[in-house]
Length: 169
Image (cartoon, rainbow, N blue to C red; front, side, top):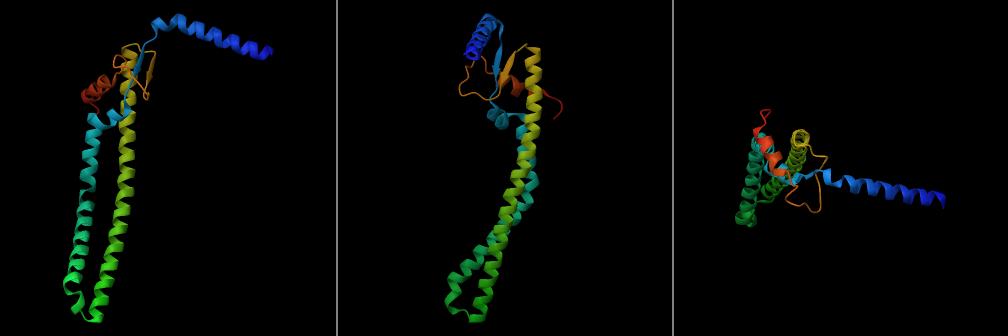
């Protein structure tokens, strides 16, 4: 019973202290998803990744085109093919399909890995920007995720501007 009373008293005192200082408290909120979509470093990272994976994408399109050509060949000539030729084309189609599926799986895995790497770098830079803004504008607390944020305390635009002006790009 004494512990319960002590805990209630402590919570009451902390609440009273917090309320007394609430007038001085400056809070900011940042929309992380928006930073990852709209910031200059995020856009540069997306372009870098697209360029990096462009050749692999072209190779997959080439294999996909070969698969479609063989399928079209089967549709037109399937009934007139000799058994040996028919089996050979089926085997070729099966091998190309397997190759294409493997390429697509590896492509997705590598792409996700690279995106995660780049986004981690963007987030690190965004965190530095948030800290710099918080220190320069004397914020007491900056949150990166919130169910609701009043536009008056949303500093996302300031972070986006800071990242756009940042010379470390």
